[in-house]
Length: 276
Ligand code: KIV
Image (tube, rainbow, N blue to C red; front, side, top):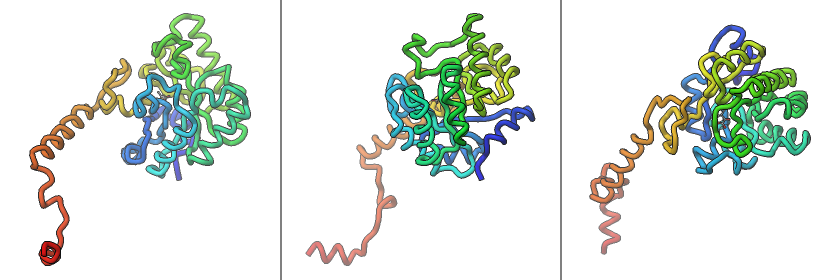
């Protein structure tokens, strides 16, 4: 049985920190789950860190479904959240419901995430009413990167901070089971965390959220285009990979790899027969 949204909500009540991490493929998801991470996000950040786009905007439903299926196949215990891509929940409630349903029915996820507050609250309510758990996402919402003028910290003014609180309350009332708070001042994240009964999951929102989510490529030091201020590199996998690939390259060029040890054998008699 996979982790349920009720268990995630209970963690807030018990004061247990909630750990969430992104994954985009089978083997990484397996490894993340084996560590004990209870909730995995198949984020549309994959557009940037896996597919090399500048923003998550080009990511389509089909791409998200493809990666979510791989993550689901690699796991059996974690709660898998599929990230609804740009314009797959804005156009109409019907589109939002149909696309949310694809994550659950086709890809095997247990929840979906979508960006926005008051503006999407009616969609959140309908999706939840149909039995699909929804995670909200406020603050820096990367799908609005052009409207926001860049991927930068949000909600610093009184008006913007007040709007964010209203958005969080609207999501809670619409039935969201958790809310991601991205790139907002930590004291505001702390206030939101006190005001809503559902867990807040921070990324660049400081230490006082109920949980934390990070992009796995950032914490592994695998995405080197830029390192977000909020990310801590627990490893430098890009360096380790460069080292390994360089060694492989050199050994193939010099004939050191492969040796007979890495090869398959055949009876010498067969070769002698063929050489006649
Ligand atoms: O797409 C993503 O990975 C996300 C996280 C940054 C929360 O939305």
